[in-house]
Length: 572
Image 1 (tube, helix red, strand yellow):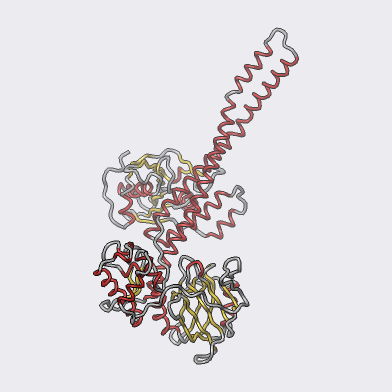
Image 2 (cartoon, rainbow, N blue to C red):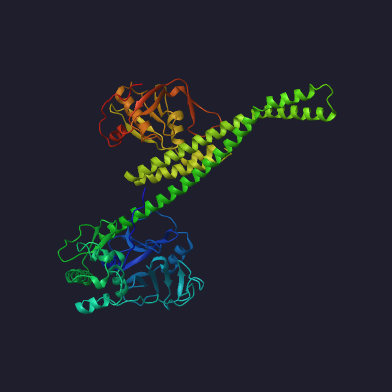
């Protein structure tokens, strides 16, 4: 799954957030600080009407200040959270300031509104240089999210105990509505640069996203054209958009909309309607969904690489053991060589010694069969388990696209499942299972209302096939292919062809063969399943069974809650 584009919060979106947040938040009483992760702090405030939470993040890819829904209780024991809790306790938020064109926000705290601030919280939203500072009334740093040493920055090293120094001023001019068209045009033409570089070089507060929105609906590829080569009409259109942006900032006319590039725009011209929902809420949802997708991709890729490395190791070890087993076939040849040596008319002492060595080596090779054979079986079981885990990972990736929350839960379950796979010792297994609780397989209904359970990891496979199955239930699995166990609860009522087709289609869909038009699926009563001793969870063998043919695409209708149509897929 390709990572979604994540647009960083620029000056325009920051001003939009503050314009909406300031009347709701100032003044308010500070109540709670907790650290969500290594780059994010949540602060809780109490106003006269409600409790309100804001998120402050210095994450390099997505520095932000946003109002958020009440978060789960976590991270209040971190050092930074404790420092903020202690430093801001009993104080009220009396100011929320952002000055000029810097992406820098200062939250001022005082005992009561109207009194001088005793603490200040400064959030710098500047890409990889983003940071958070707690200052005392003398502007001295009491706590900092990220210490900046001299080795990291010669211009502005800053750490606890230092007097706070603002970041160096940005280059370029501050935009102004009083500036004339000719002067503005001349500033952009000073250097031989394409427009997308001339805009942020000449003027502060211009981000790549803003430059893109300024030329929306204008000439194609305008941003990549040299500023000196723009036509008169293009200059006039761009100037009009520039003035609309400055007017929106001055009048605090903001609104949220997504653009075609996966980013967003927060300023609106005079003809735009007022937003129907909170801009903060929409921005928070935007960041949450994209950061969650990024986290999912990172975890998914890390688990995939680990599984692939483990699979490669198991295959190499299997090949090594197979090589040792192949040498056993040479034992007969060794014995024949020894027989030939001893059949000589007058064998010497050295000849007899050589023959004895050959006999000994042949016997050792034959004895090794008893040790090598179970090792080969164990490696094969591990390979099948790892291949199954990789298949589950592919299916989880698809599930995330239509249900992110479920996809994350299944990924976490597979991560835990994989950890147990890599553990050679099985001690305390019952305790681990007790702490994890019952698995949550995918549960669907067949066209006639029978329950169908689909395992989406090894533990869920074992749970539905061996622990929860009852006499009369039917088990489905793609033949000779890694994938999910599917159990049709036909112990409740007799299954008909439509029920069998639904279960077989799901087994084909949730397998490595899901890209084929027709997949062979094994169907057998659950009472015919047996756990393989010593194998990992979800590894079973069965007696008998019937092979059905199923179309994986037929499962799409069932997953969407639509009726299935019989099309002859069940013919053996």
